[in-house]
Image (cartoon, rainbow, N blue to C red; front, side, top):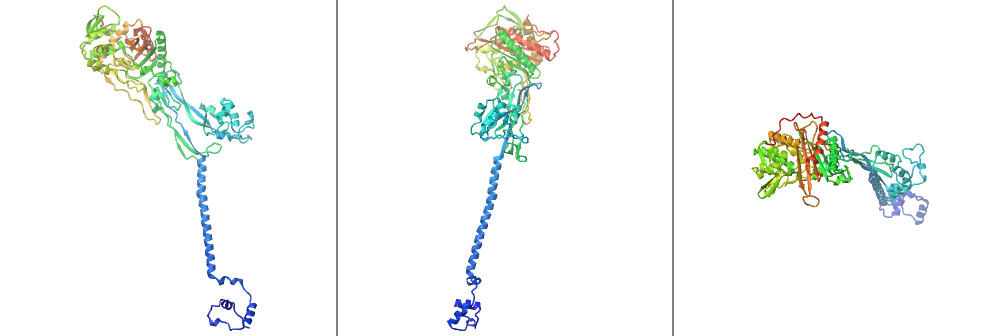
Length: 638
């Protein structure tokens, strides 16, 4: 029997192999069939039948593996990138920025006494969504920092808004119904209370309601002295910005600068340690130091109110100025306004904004100008009648009198309108205007107070015949209390006009010096001229001694009375004023008092007593040496 090898069988089955050496010896088909029947079939050899089919399967498997690999890479990238996005969103939801407000600065007097300050306060707000979701945490003895003691409430099982109201209402002094109404809703920010004190904030925080209740740092403006300097200090609005008075004038210096802190917050509201990412320091506002002495201001306000009440005047104004510096030690009016109140925010300071004709106090300017121009000496003699007519216009003195034989100094002492016109016959009109300007009439005081006025002085080219003469004795132009105070202060300072100041020093939130500048110092008249005018003014004070005295002290003065427009628009009202320099032998202070429509007419017996009362207080407070006897009086009569 011939055995056919497997490979021979395979080749024979194929029927296409032409290799004769491997071709079996022909035999009968029956024998061949029997041989094949005896040989076993081996499945493992099937792959060998199609090598190309095996390659296709391998490629397919590689493609599938590649697709799976790409899918896995995609999933990994998605997890990495998408997960980072989710993490970022989660971080963002936990991240908050808390703004810290810089406290508004202080206003203090010249001695450092606080006149305006801001105290720490908070605005308390609620998250209504947090209130709706609120569930009290039962106190176990180990969770005192987060739990709520509901046993003390009327409904221990309450949740949500009701539970928050149960806990919070007693602390705030509110009814649960009222508070519940504010807590109900979907807003994340509802203001519950403003100007919350630190003590009340601590009480609320002890309830552990940080998921519902929050606080924003604010401040409250306080004025310890109430009405003292009320309409000078002014006030601030709800945002803490100055809107009137010094609060507005010095707002940039006083305003604080806000800071902020950014961090991640836990569900309980606390900062997560180590998550702070950004912070900037809040800066408190600067300090504004006034030239005002609070003690002097208090006394001036008191004396002025008493005087206005006694005279039944519509209003009064008083100013105290230091001669050597131009500093305003007190500035007051009779308006009884509480600093920081709505009234203080809308009421203008009369001392800064009210204008009026000065009347005979304006003769101080004319007398100084005549002497400075060399047109007269203080001892020049005049024969002065009761009336005079110039270019068809008649002028008369305040009281009827016989002919006076008086000097230039005597004209000022007697406050003679007629005498003033007579001595000014050679005084050019343009010079009359020039000296009014030199003494500060129609000029800014240099104190940039909101609403302050410069008065009114029209150019001499517009003056008619009457105006040209009435300007000699304080009519035809309008002044402020500050301007007339500085006129006399210029004479008291040897003829040198100083810039007036209300702010002694000021810094802003960065510590920068922002003290306002003052007007330039200028010499208006010679020292000898100023001394002669002051000498004549002391004679005025001696004439008025029956109404106005400062025991132990000499002073120089001038009174004035001017007609001004009344409520009906006609010249039906008067301004009575009295200005003094004290002591006359060595002037330290100038004090001026102005009253509208007092019971009397003459400034010496209406405003004068108030002026000298203030002068006496100043002499005592500053321990000024008593005056020596007067020995150098310039003759006023001949």
